Length: 211
Image 1 (cartoon, one colour):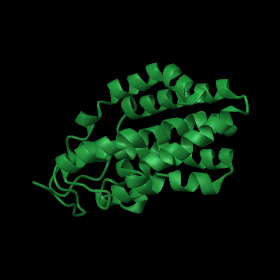
Image 2 (cartoon, one colour):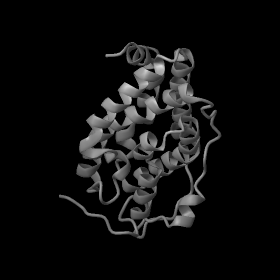
Image 3 (cartoon, helix red, strand yellow):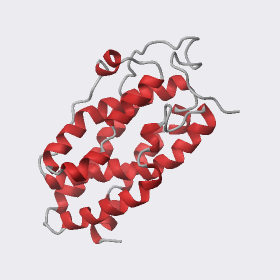
Image 4 (cartoon, one colour):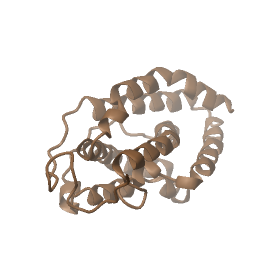
């Protein structure tokens, strides 16, 4: 493990544990209604952060495969939102990354979430009958390539740390965890189009259901 990864894990532990505690994701994805509200909040967060990350990193070949905003939009369409409703979802005001060090700090949070996302995707599949192809693309993330993508990110992270701006990188990671927790866990949920048969049941768009 690189020195910067060890430092990030140690110094973000409190913020990381806080979002895991407050988010209580198993409760949030217990129904389709709750799951859809959670994805809507994630969409707003990524809609603000991803363009800033792209600008700060200046490396499309590296960052484009790591974008997940389109995955969120695809999931929300499966769950009954049209493009107009998606674009109208609320977005947070964030302290955006100003340089590569701060961008890598934020991206550490987003890329790290793809690891736990594999566990959550399987849970959602069992609970709600959704798959990466139908309603669970965001959590499925890189799928079978998740390990490879994480290894590649770790190598770039270590290279970035050699530039010497590690304090800014770590502070950005902590700030991203905190901002995500506040947005997902304390902000009011958006008003969404009701499901066809009532909240918590089938969405307007068809999704596969498993026994």
